[in-house]
Image (cartoon, rainbow, N blue to C red):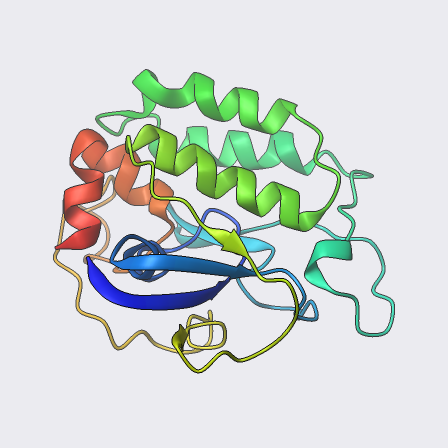
Length: 202
């Protein structure tokens, strides 16, 4: 664990780079006052399906001008929780650990979340629980770039290739595709189970 503090955006079932930054810093701050931006990890996660990488997107209410993440409402008009759970089942049902942990995710998707921040924090807390990690975080009190923080808010982005290095692990569709790095933490967890924490921090 490093001695520095890190500032992260609130992501939905974050990717491995996000969790590595989270777990390797002694202090973690999660931004709640930044404005919501489309086409980011703030309301999407990417899993590896039979057809390759698949983005699972959480629909949000119509954007008002400069809506903070903490105020962004989730749109439940479409039954997206059911679709996301079925996508996980289709992608990982044959993985080594899906059957042991599926009930946690079924419960997660049956819960109704008040806003996007609540959903994202719940997804992070669930993964920390399953990895048996009690490393906590603090929410920012305002939108300020504090000089003692490593600012990762804009560095982890679907359209920005990661500069981090990732070891290969056996993925479900390895016979169809070469290894795809830095997927959602879900991909590592269903394939590596109890070794997920060690993988992330390696």
